[in-house]
Amino acid sequence: MRLFFHLFLLPLVLSLSSAKEIAITNFIRDTCKKTLHNDLCLTTFQSDPNSHKADPKGLVAIVLRIAHAKASMTHDRITGLMVGENNQYMDQCFNDCSEQYLDAIDQIEDSLAALESNGYSDVNTWVTAAMGDAQACEEEFDVVGYRSPLTTNNVEFTKLCSISLAILKLVTGSG
Image (cartoon, rainbow, N blue to C red; front, side, top):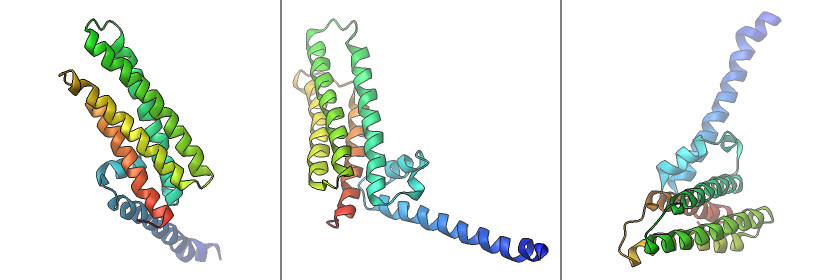
């Protein structure tokens, strides 16, 4: 009987669990194809060990947590750039960006809370506002004619927010 299990049932069980993993991977791949940033979407979910078992709402939560971490890191970077800045225009840009990213962090936190309570309209509102904060930070430098040292951070944060909104549409059935 034991030999029967090892020779016949064990390979069957392993192939079934393997098929489930493929389906989950395909689910994430198919979900990411519905976003504007497929590659970043895939990379984001590959970096989170819980993504393989998440439903669309769980995927939104994962992206929002990663966006929150990105916003926090960007704020920390801004704080570091502010130290020793002697140009009053750049200093003002960094001060404004610091405030905008503090707002964005709060908005992503509010989005996570709204997602938890199925307040999808609120999630959309807060994430959209957070994207606006990153864009406003980027535009601060354009106004004074300087090149933003935060472009990469702003773009990646905005893309993460965009991914969360695209997947949110799948959750609400509007996408």
